Image (cartoon, rainbow over all chains, first blue to last red; front, side):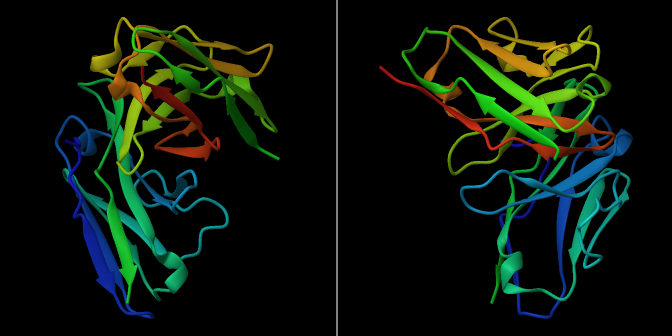
Amino acid sequence: QSVLTQPPSVSAAPGQKVTISCSGSSSNIGNNHVSWYHQLPGTAPKLLIYDNNKRPSGIPDRFSGSKSGTSATLGITGLQTGDEADYYCGTWDSGLTNMVFGGGTKLTVL
Amino acid sequence: QVQLVESGGGLVKPGGSLRLSCAASGFTFSNYYMRWIRQVPGKGLEGVSSISSGGDITYYADSLKGRFSISRDNAKNSLYLQMNSLRAEDTAVYYCTRALSGGLDVWGQGTTVTVSS
């Protein structure tokens, strides 16, 4: 059972927008920066968002992140079939002194 | 280019040991915290262990304390994970990652550890 809670799956049509939620507690999301990753089958995860809402170089502005209290949200606009992947939120947990993640959300672009 | 390459995975019997290595290149290794993350096939990500840039501060998942040991050699640009008393539930792909502020910005390709008799 994951420390952070994400919906198992989300779906939307090409060109539409989708959001993925990530819920935690004061020991993790509430007091630490959130990051988001996507992972294609058989490959390593790739950083999409760090420090709650910053995009690494090369990540398009279709991807956005936000945080409020003990929850965070990843937004993806202009969905493309290539966005189909598993998405994970992550953060440091000050109580566990360990990196923690959500269970992952499978995005389907219908 | 910035790269992390893991090695040392394989098949080991329950109770056995393995030492994973991660070779870093393309950046100043000694400036960064590093973390090991693992993933059971078909499952989610799990934090394993972290180490400070100088190697003097280490953290472990509660379930692994006493069995796993993280270390680094900044002169060799290398990160290590010594895994002892391995169990079937330690079977996973192990990723070496670079910690950037609030995220993990560089990931290796992963090395597979299988614990089975």
